[in-house]
Image (cartoon, rainbow, N blue to C red; front, side, top):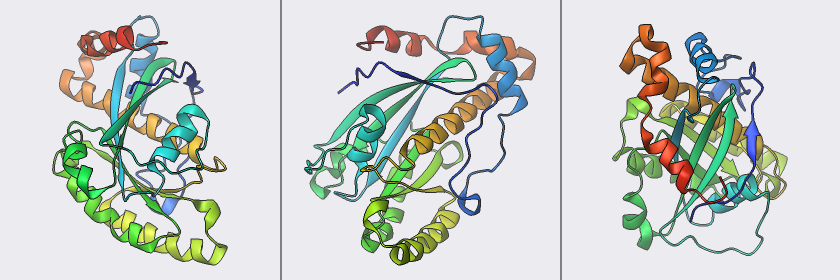
Length: 254
């Protein structure tokens, strides 16, 4: 389904949100690339949204994928578990450096019988979020396989990876510390950025998705610049396909 959540999440112009752990981050710089900022200055005079990023969320059944998305998009937490059938879809709008930007959040089923259906939606992702349960070591062990399955449909050089531990509130400090050590070790191996969050309390959820938005936004802008060349920074705006504009026209409540 398409979310009708009307809010837009604004980023301060100078803000590049902090990572969760410097030891397991895609990068730790504190500001956007100068070329990205230049493009955004040009875009402010335009009327089109700059881009949309596809983000797929994968992981074992019942690790909290849907709860993670619902906490951010709807500011709600559903205590009663309900399995995702195939895939679900949310659109969340942001304003990054004054430019409209959206994340398509694809919530995929963790059940084996729906894997074939869900995997058909993996292709064309700008970011992959692999979710595991901080209170379940097996779900962390399975994270590598989930990533491998998702990467079969994507170009490793153009996808941002995130390893997210959920249910932080259910883990004791000792258990959390041990699991995080293993998770950070895995994130370093697979070159993913690690986060620990709680969908129940909301701890870290907003910061995490803002981080995803900022990194995917920057990656998308730099990708367009690479295609068009730095001499055509102003033309990047015209290069963006009509897909984004049409998507906003179709989306209810936008």
